[in-house]
Length: 201
Figure 1 (cartoon, rainbow, N blue to C red):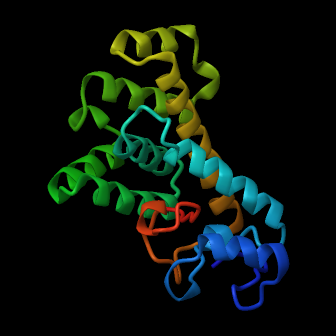
Figure 2 (figure 1 turned 180 degrees about the vertical axis):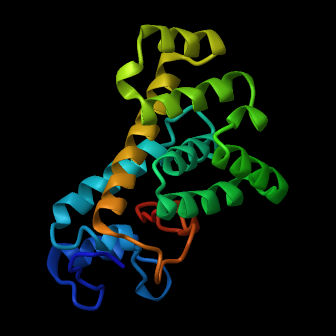
C-alpha cells in the first residue's frame, strides 16, 4: 500500500468519492498511486489531469506504445518498480507481441535501448534517459539532434512531458512507499466504455 494513511473507497465521501468513482476499476479497486493522494484530493485531481493529457490525449502525435516505452524506461532508470510494472503491462497490451515486448524490456533494463530501437525512436529514448539521469547537462544541441532524427518540435514536447511526468510519478511512489499490493496491473482508460474514466496503466 503506502507508508502514509490512506482513505479506502468504502470510507470515502464528498469530492474524494467522486474522484474514486471516475478512476475505480473492477470491484471498486483504486490503484495505490491514487490512494496515496487521498488525504489531499486536489493533488489527485491534478495528477489525474496531467497523466491523462500527457499520455492519452488524442492530439498527441507520437504512438501511444512509444510513449509507454518512454515511461517504462524512465521508471527503470529511477528504480521505480511500481510504474515500470504498470506501464510495461500497458505497453505489452498495446504491442500485442510478447516477444517484442520482452526484447524491449530487456534492452531497457540493460540500459541499452540501441539493442531494440534505432533511428528516431532511439534518439527519443536517449533524450529521455539523459533528461532523467543528467537533466542539467542538456543543451540546445540535444534538441537539434532530435530534430535531425525526425522529431517535430511538438513531438519533442511530447517526449519531454512524458519523461517529466514519470519523474514526478516515480518520486511520488518511491517517496511514499507505494507498492502494487491489491492493484490490478495494467488497466488503462481504454479499458472502460466511459470516456471520462481514468486508470493508471
